[in-house]
Length: 613
Image (cartoon, rainbow, N blue to C red; front, side, top):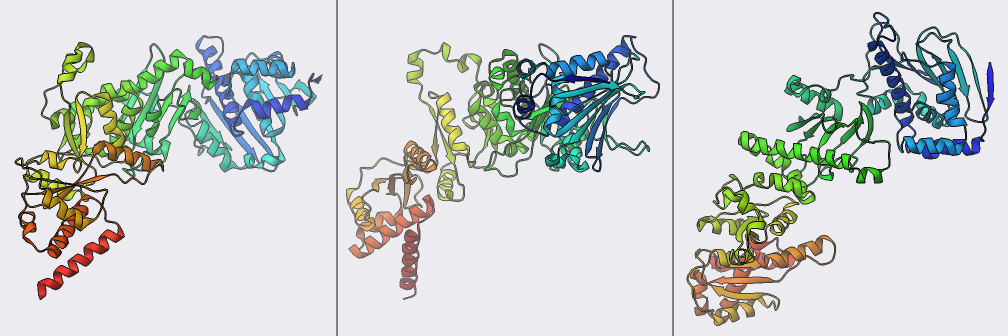
C-alpha cells in the first residue's frame, strides 16, 4: 500500500471545494455520472479504432447504488478505467499539489460545471462526503487500483481485486447530508441532471431483467426531424415538462454548421391570457443537463416557451460575462430567434386557419418578443393579427385595406423628409373592453366603421411600440378617445346655451363640455378622453405615481331629439335631464364610482315615480 501526504491543509482545500466549486450541492451527482459516461465514450472510441476489444453482449451503462445502512452512495461505470499512474495524475496531483494550483486549474476548466475534467469533477463528491474511495481497473490489463481519502492531509493507494474494466466511486455520505441516502432523492437527481445521458443509468440495479433505466439515451431532439412523429413530440413534451396540456406547436432545431445545436422549443397552451408565464428552456451539453433559462444563450422572450436545447459548442464552463461577449453564443441566440420567427411566418402563410386558432395562446409571446427584439419584430410584424368588431382576424394592412408592402416602402432610407412630412399616419381605432365600451362599439357599427380588439394586458405597451416603430404610418386611438371625430355629422356652431345648462347640472369644473352633431342621433351624449394623456395617466397609475384619472370631455349630441328639446324645459327639469344624460354617458364610458351609481339609481327611481303618477 502506498501512502502520501497532502501538502495543503483541509482548512485551505475544503472551502475551495465546498464554497467555490459549485453553487448547488446536488450537482455532484451530475459530475460523477458525467465522468462515468465520458469514460464509456472513450472506451467505445478505442474499440472503434481497433485498440480495444468489445465484450460480447455487454451493456454500456452506469449503475448507482444507495446503501442506507452503510451510508454510502456508489456510482459505477464500465468505461475505460484508470491505471495507478493515471489515478495519481488525474486525482492526486490535480488537487493535492496545492490549493492555488487547484483553483487555477478549476478556473481554467470553468466556473459552474467541469464536465469532462475528471479530477476536478470528481472532487465535487466531497461536498456531500466525509470520505471517498475510487476502485478502478484500466482496459489495458494493468492491476486494479484502490484509492481513498477524506480530503484532509493523507490519501492511500493500493492494489484492488476488481476484475472487470471500469471505475467505481464510493462516497461515504456525511451525517448532515443524509438526504442523499434516500433512493427517491437520487432518482429525482438523475431525472433532473441525467435524463438524456447517452448510456443507461440504473439505480439499485438488481440484474433480474426487470430493471428499467431512469434516462432516455436518444432524446427526441437528437433524432432527424423527418423521423419524428406528432405523437412523439407530444409525448416528449409531457414527459419532459410534466405538462399534460398538449403543446400548440413546436420548432425543431437542428444545426451542424457553423455551430452544433439541436433542440425542440414548444409553444405551451396559455393558462391565463393576462399573464406572461415563464417557461422552462433546459440547456444541455452533449446530453448532460447544465441549467435552465440561461439568458445569455436563449433570448429572454423565448423563455416564455418550454424547450430543450443541446449546444456542444457553447463554452458552458465559463463565466456569464464571457457568454455575454462570446460571438459564437450571440450567433446561436440569433439562430434560435430566426428559427422561431420562420416557424411562425410559415404557419401564417401555409395554414392561416391553424394560425388563427392558436393566436390567443401565442399573441402575448409574439408581442413581447417584438418589444424585446428588433430582429424578431422585423420578421413577424406582418403576421400579427387582431380581431375586428366582426370577430374576423386581420393584420394591420388587411384591416386598413392596404396592398402588400414592398421592400422600398418598408425602408426609410428611400424616403425624403418631405415624403414623411406630407404623409399623415393612419388612425386605427381599438377596443380594450368590449363590454364596458359596448355603446361606442354600437355607434361605430351603426356608422359602418370598424375597430380592432386590444384586450390583453400587453396591448397598451404594444400599440405604443408600434407607433414608435412607424411614427409616420400609424396612430392608435381607443374607441372612446375620439368618437366625436370619427362619427362627426354636419358642422354646426357650438351651442353655448346647452353647454351652460349641462355645466350647471353637472357641477364638475374639471369636465370640458362641447356640442357637436353626430351621425348617430340615438345617443344624447358621449365622453371622450385624450388618447395620449390617458395612456400617460394609466402608466403613472401602474407605477403608483397617479390615480389613473384623466381629464374628460363631454360631447353633447345636438342631433339627438331629447337634446334638441332640453332648452324648452323648465329649469328644474333641464337640470334633471342634463344630469341624467351625463350619468348615461358615464355608464357607457367607465365603471361608475359608488357615488355616481347612487345618484344614477336615485334618478331612475324618480323617473319611475313620475311615470306611474
